[in-house]
Image 1: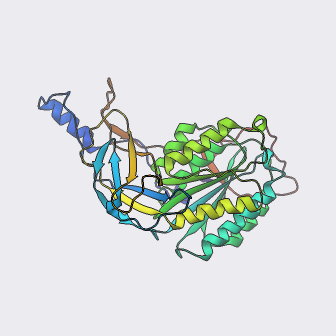
Image 2: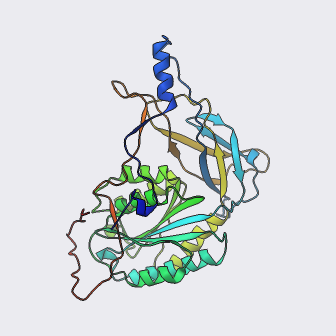
Image 3: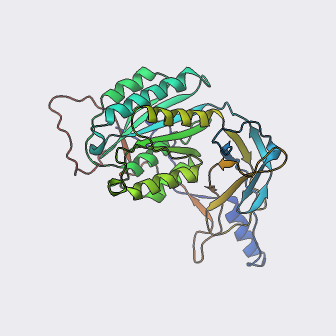
Length: 366
């Protein structure tokens, strides 16, 4: 059994509290009698990354822009772009999260066929360091493979999936985000599902925060076997749309077969035409909110106001201490080995192994 945050997973354990420099600044200001109501600024040494795609009115990627054509604002404050790459070739780490709950049983084969073709396309072109990992989620989250360039290894795991149980989508996003967080280059989560979460132990907000902390872009593929509104999970669709909007991805809603292949082609096209921008936050007044809102716009000669820019909506950074807080502005690291967040490696299935019932809850063993 592999725990996220354990030595086996390659992600260092991070526990306890870390006091950041803005907290020290606040304490010093109090000691020397500075006006407590004066705005506090903190120049963060952390480079904030933004992956962005720009498309014209026809949905065609615009790949010819320069750094001067972009404007980045952090909580409304204009920032200086320190890093810029057009059609970045930084390696991709792509985690494919596939729903193998009971509701997918009939269509699962068609979904796995499309995933197989996508993995082959990723490893056939692009950066030679691009890799893909496979996760499945139903009543539990299983890491089927590590990050690999071997499409056959992923295909073998896909063929073993069977639709059963409920849907722990948020748990899958949280675990995959923590697994991908320390990898170099661009990080992407592709979620193949037919509906919303109904079984996770973690919350939507916690999963969304984990994806933001990992700098991951989320592309949900919401398979649409049901076309009438009466049979659709609108709440699940809204949650997936929010994941995509917050991280700079987009939602695809294909039917099976050729339409799903087209969705994967669209994701790959977006990834091959991304801009990479980076900035060091400067002169941003601190608030009690850790989440900093980002806006990215195109401007200047050659830019068109009708173009659509897709990029993350913000990041988690420094904040002022909340009123009445005894700890000041401290950044609390997340314990990534919490007992209810365990990912299990694929186990061989024997004839005597009983399948879990749809109502069975995830185990939390050790």
